[in-house]
Length: 512
Image 1 (tube, rainbow, N blue to C red):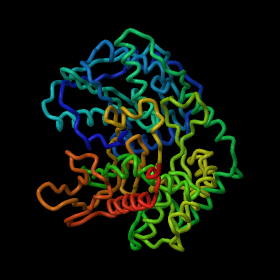
Image 2: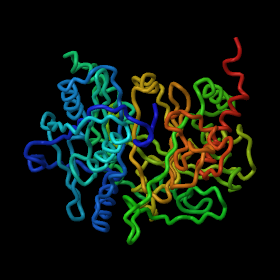
Image 3: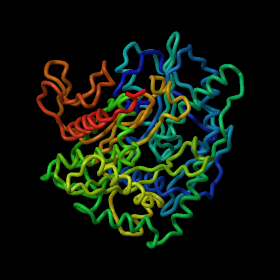
Image 4: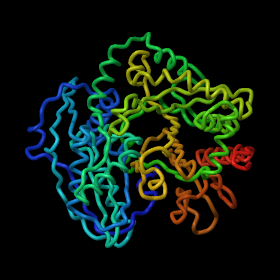
């Protein structure tokens, strides 16, 4: 299943309809809800509010996530409406809103069955480009976190097929939510179309999870193990939060990150980040790589991080490799298919000063993954309060295995994609590695850098993935005749090449 920036791939043209949730009577009819707000959600709201005060623009709109699902059948308007309304009723986070009141917060919630959908026919598009721009712009405007709803839906209908799209502010969903959501939405649609009852498991409420997580976190003190782990990490290497810099002379960026687009005085054109999406290994090569990791005593996750560390050391000579790892907090079956922001972060640091072999690096990565797990046992914003840390993660590597999610094979074959908005962050580098039924995929966003993949008129400076070949192997980026390649592209290319070389040493699947 691909994880892409919405403008990275076309959407087949057709008739665009936007579906906007509303409640008759507005927020005034909602009940006051005493359940607490998560640290993640509160910080997200306050950052958006501060950005609005400073710039008179809406903050946070560039932090939405979404999903795009393809259906090989004509669009049924009644079935889509029934699907979306039932999905909203199923996930309470879509029927709850938090507002800032002075120094405090107030949650408002509304009961199942109260949210309706307004259908807006936008028009018929004969080209993909204008269609994608319209959808991306609508999602940007609709997902501002200070408003409800901070989410919306869209459909693109054709004679024999249609596309269903959804986008929501990050405070309402995470990537895993959307991996599971594609199966839920397909199941709900088929049930609505066939007038049957959908077979879906019971699901918990992220609003309940947020309240419990906040209550427990606020009761902790500086003696919590997560505080010690993060304190040690932040004193290592160059100190502070690690940034991505492949040149020794790269200056360390400021620790504090402003929310929303970065707008300097007199600058009305903030520059969006670059993005790259591609294939690292196919399924067979991924299995061979995993076999090598297992022989070294580690998992595929440890092997991926070990490879990242070795390539980073080769580029920089830095004696330590440091990054931040997202970890899900779905510690109960109630949360497995729930929409919400179930994410904590953990520090990751391994010694590479002796230029270890891959096997040695896997052993170190395995030990560090076990040790740093405690770092994610408390929301980082609470940890930051306890240890006096300012600033947020800037170099983040995420790994997730989607092979066992319902409908994973069909989604990976092209039925569904997880979408993300563009970002204007000037210093952040985010890399997502996904193990899917077809292999290992990579997606990344990073500050703009000069890139040219191939000579000639087809070479795109900021488009390393040719639009008609969206699954170009990442190891091929920069091969052949190139005029330049940026540091993130070079890093990911060398990472992919290393994984391929490691897998080639395995005899997995060649015997018997």
